Length: 93
Image 1 (cartoon, helix red, strand yellow):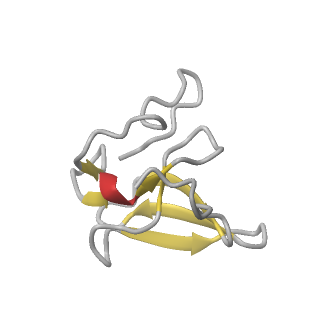
Image 2 (cartoon, one colour):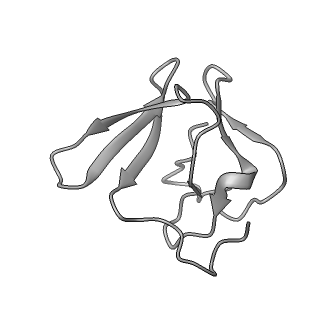
């Protein structure tokens, strides 16, 4: 699912209803709501994907940054940053 909405605000950041997040372009399964956690960014954050091939990651020029794409159609999903993840005791799940 393309979570990013730069002009209208992020609608899935505080969305914790149980379910599966899928790509908005091809419906490929990406993340389970069980792996979602509170994060300081305006976008939703997850600790793991549904399947090994749910997403693909491509190293960016900025050290420790990866562009994350849908593993099936290549739709842009956002970024992953090394050493950025849930802190113990802060995760909702």
